[in-house]
Image (cartoon, rainbow, N blue to C red):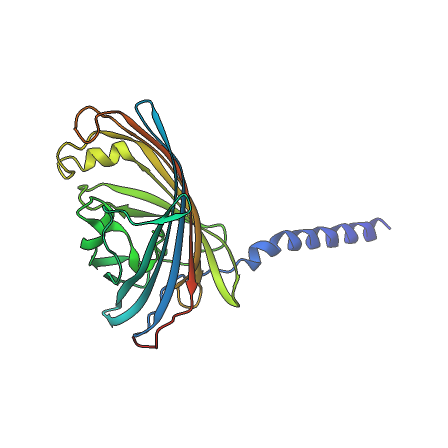
Length: 291
């Protein structure tokens, strides 16, 4: 009887250990990579809803804006393992308090073509064509149109498992050697429209004081000192087979203080508090293939 009890206890212990190990054994590694194909075309729609308020002196003004943009990506060529991607902005609309408006300060971005040279890890090696969009604004040239708006994720070198995190550096143009660190986490793998997709969480924080210090001498004359921070958390779904973006949603929180009095353009101190919700979805291409 005592022997039988020991056998049963041993069997139960082995079973318990095996059950405990099952999740670890079931963990699958994924090597995230872009797979390029010449003339491959994808079309996206981005929506950004911004809400907050701006305070200048004793006056407070509510901010309620929305931007809707559609653009197309086309792989124009592949050389030395890198793809040349042409991103064409088809339309951009701005809304203020529910009413469409056209800002006289905003550039005409319709049919703007941005060219990026990108490798299979989502690293951008070259970007051209942002002149009409950037209007010379420092930092705008870093927008990675070739791999998806507001998504700075670069794939890690080796395999990752669900729950793994990695960090990448986001360089800021016109800011010397300043780089910010983005943290990425593979949250899970799930089906999106029948496609196996990796859901990656990206976290990025940019302190404006540090940014302004690094860009000293690069900003327009009379630009007042700025402090504050911008924080972004985005969840992006990547096609496991191709590495292409299927969709993205994210949140941004920004607080900005600008010291007035030093410039006629900003005679008063200004403070802005804003939150934004971003979404990016892949939509049906309406043009013939190859166009």
